[in-house]
Figure 1 (spheres, rainbow, N blue to C red):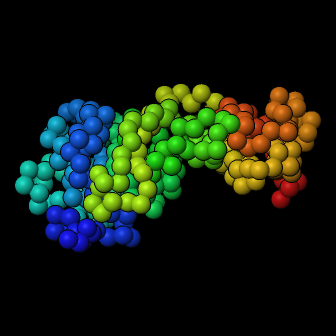
Figure 2: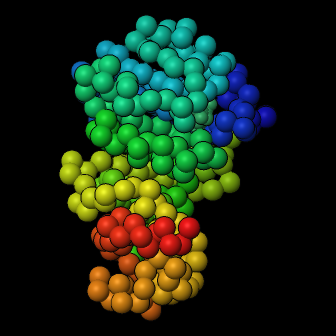
Figure 3: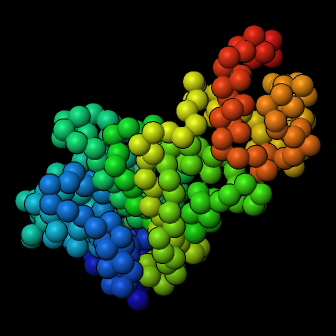
Length: 275
Ligand code: SAM
């Protein structure tokens, strides 16, 4: 049997289509999400409704964003879900979650078994809307979940970790083997819960500066900070900030990255001199 055909649909690689087929895993994800009537629940990439059906059963209304026109059309005519669904047939990367939360008058609960080919840019897109999001549950490559939850000092700790933990509390939920999908992906998967902080613990003045520093530091992660960030911070500044210049990018905390970003924002001269 062709393992790319599931429920009469030919899985499209370009849309990262790996459909969940495992009832135990599906039930576990739905319990983790714990959808409640009255909440505004948005699913990214509902596909053939493996998660949409059990989540939709618990709600009076639900919103989905699906890029694949055929799948969006199928959902429209779904026997019991169809009438409950608001369907956006569009790329989730272009969806304005803040506008939608405003329209609905409350913050959103977002979830999805994300297409792995765009999961990282999609998460960065969502981080820009954390003010409008109550929580997020995502199925991702296990390696990406490991990066999201990592602490300083580990190989998995990187730019994605710092940016995710800046905005959210990150909690691993469950691991999922390839056989739980049709067709099976080549990698292990895992589900993660991201809960935007009500108050950002270490707010930065300018996110672009934080983003820039993490790009520089982790772009040269084998180098010491004195080398990777030397063009932005003098040795004296690093010492003044209590940051050991002989450490590497993976050894300093999210709070310390924020401290660096705020120092740089307060000393724009330093940046200008470098440009
Ligand atoms: N939720 C289904 C499941 O768990 O079986 C399908 C998951 S499949 C991994 C990813 C889904 O996201 C597919 O339905 C795919 O068409 C959709 N998708 C891919 N890229 C998308 C994008 N940029 N915006 C919205 N949906 C997208």
